[in-house]
Image 1 (cartoon, rainbow, N blue to C red):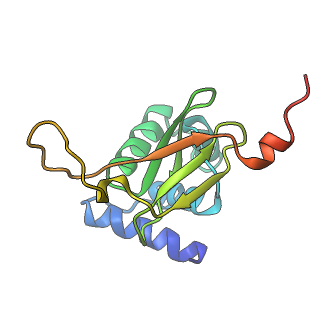
Image 2 (spheres, helix red, strand yellow):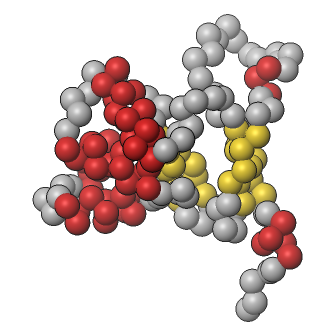
Length: 146
């Protein structure tokens, strides 16, 4: 998927959710389109303040959470790095295998929700996430020196 196409997809989801497409939101979409890895709220804030010096951290954080809720961004919690965000793949459903050392991420199509699962209560499932955390082969072969 091309970078500009990814930005357009993100903006289309925002628009469908009733958001006005402001220059700041377009810039935030561009930040994630340009980034293959994960960004902390501070990383995004630091990039946003280059163009918008008066933007508040609270505004950036609130937008990140809302973009995550509408599916434009995926959020992950790293034990050492805290909460981070990454642009969602909007074209198909998949899950992630994430290295806790270098944050390298592999996608896989297996979905546990497609298996016969007995869940408590009578919930109507709206969405789900499934991440597997581990240490990638490269990090296993090159342990950090102390």
